[in-house]
Length: 499
Ligand code: ATP
Ligand code: MG
Image (tube, rainbow, N blue to C red; front, side, top):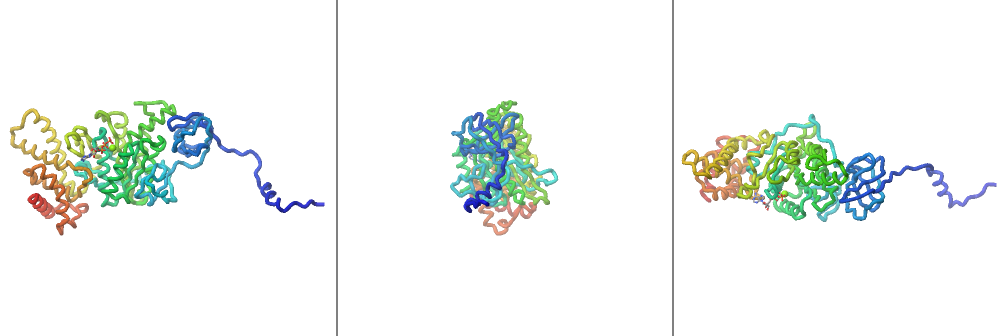
């Protein structure tokens, strides 16, 4: 006689039949020690570099380095309640960031979490924070400029689309302002700007965001912020995740500008994490891989070939130096992995020559090839004339020059200095820049006093806008022919008469 079973037991029986019996492997780890946002973890033998792990408290971290007997995990959330013995589990996911159009206009942290009280970016696509840089055959020559709107940069150190130009100088010498002015000048261009704040004060970051909100085009800008008070892990990730966000646009044929403010602080965070994880310290106590870390970051800036869509990623890393020491470890590293540097000088800044760019130490190794022809034709002698003036100025402190030719050069030099000075948030368009330099070259400004020159700079744009022909003139595509030049100079003369 077969025993009747209760039909209610049937589902249970089915489950038992399906159950897999036998040993089950779950990777478990536990925290051995934790200090200042870095945990040493035991276990998790299958874990990968850059993988996200979760602590049993809910906090997350990522695997910063793998050692023979343990892992180093950098925390991405406050981990006050994580302690020795806390359980750690793998997620199987590498550190990644949401990418896509929905990030435009947003302020987010390096994991894509909103910092602007807005909703989570509704992006379904994510990219890993570490990605390979484009190979040589995927790249094209850098031939088009990113206009900064700063006359001194566009004329002397033109930056090309796809170039890496370092902005380096002592603290409070206007480094951030040069980058922010460049972002603001993209309000009328097709370039998307990405500003990454690493280890900055909240007030400084706020200042930048407000400037772009007010003077730039917010909906074409993304801010990735890991301030000084953020977890070191977040600060470490910031430049990498921002670059992945930028690459999503670059790989779709778009043009992107990325500002890393600043990599000196990033290097300091890397050093801090390395020392906590007991990696052997090298020069200036930085771990040996710091050069490779920044090299592989900046290699991701590129101008892509037509076959790859022709997009570009231009990088403006910022670095701080102490006591004018350009040859310290991190500055020399960064100089050698970028295509030029804009050096800001404390003495020029103090003398009110702002942007305080030292033209002797600055260089753009791609620039000239990427400069518009119209600009190139008027900027030719500028650097030499200005350099000579600065030299003469230094010597004339010991007594004036009697020579008339010398006096004329001094006069010209003073006008160049006045032209190259520019207040913050007042970018100049290409036409105005070319007009000012042509007027200088023709000697039109020689007898104009210096105060009038700064008035001229503010009045010229509206004078050009009012001119029916010149307002339509696009100097990016054309050379500056004689006819054009004389009508431009005519407007300059008229504007001078009115000021
Ligand atoms: P930090 O080392 O603190 O990051 P920084 O080198 O980035 O400083 P900024 O913050 O850009 O320098 O500028 C320092 C100060 O100089 C600011 O108060 C800014 O308003 C002023 N400044 C910068 N550029 C100009 C300019 N072109 N004209 C007038 N003032 C300027
Ligand atoms: Mg700054």
